[in-house]
Image (cartoon, rainbow, N blue to C red; front, side):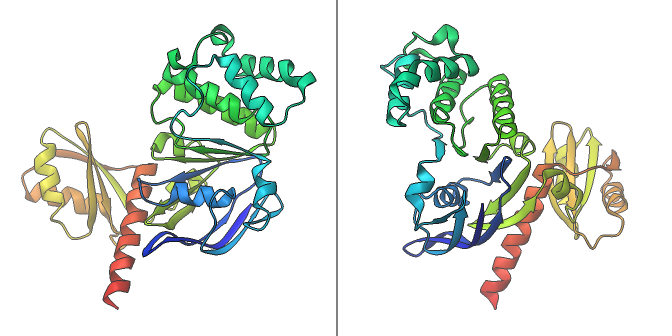
Length: 312
């Protein structure tokens, strides 16, 4: 799956701005970004649900938008909001969807029973969808989206309203699908979910600001990451935010994460000296970045480049 110069405009708004992507088959590919960053719009164009304003897309060997109808027959799509019939039971919902997908009548029971078992819905099969928990609704929606064994599965922020254990179970299912050959595209604003993806694109203001394997993005962050432990986190933060070379300071409980510019040769020394001069007692150490740090650095650079372009 690939995209070159993929763009979507809505009037004067450019929701997706000339992005290039190479998405491997049988992998989980994530789109990470805040609301309005363009991740959902990009995914909808990739699967033929939205016509691009410009650019080229190839999905499952088909050209989009020219062969979008062929693509649609080979995808499963799960929206952020539960969209099945709440006044039908689990089994009734799955039977209906199987019929819509064209599952042969002689395979209908086998297909539905298999989905109920695989997605841990055996005890709920006669239960109305409206009475299911958030995690159960999530599994039902995923079961419905995969009844026809799609080659491509699209998930638009699928775990935004479920508990941590349900999210973990959900991702176990996704890894199983990928191992069986399904390509999974998932949008999220959860950093821990993004770290689970095989590859990841970070979007900001419609642009891809970082792309690659999560561990590579963390390794190549292009900034110093310093952790500060102190009993006076507010004073430490106020001090560091005024120091040239410190790009960002985030509080994590009693700890702070400070990001320094790539040009700073000794990030730990810069932070330590600044705190000493401000009479803030603290323990300072250089640490490995996390994905949130990567996101902050990448989006900050994108904003700075945007300002430079505007000034020019």
